[in-house]
Image 1 (cartoon, rainbow, N blue to C red):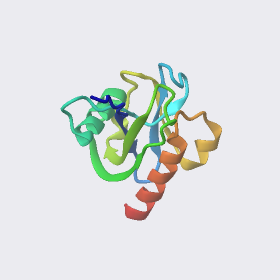
Image 2: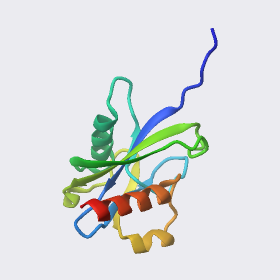
Image 3: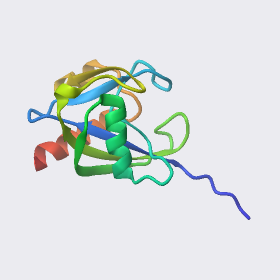
Length: 140
């Protein structure tokens, strides 16, 4: 029987406010240690992607989120140096005053679109953030 390599499934969550400011976490671990990233992580076996997104948001930001919409699926094989990952990105709302760096997050902060060029962003999250901002501004 032939063995197939299977990509890992992840989720990323764009948590935004009414002014389209959004939360990023500073990564505590490699890859991209000390770079800013969207909250997110690996989907666990037996877990839906939606449930994973809500769990990862809570684990990394301390925020209980409500998923508002699916943004896109990102599957470039080289998007993560650890191996082929496919991420499902969501936009979400939650009480941003509850934010606190948790789990794999070294820091947490709120950013505006204008600040994106001034910070080091992990993975392909700059593209995901731009896609999320476009969707959120058009739909909400």
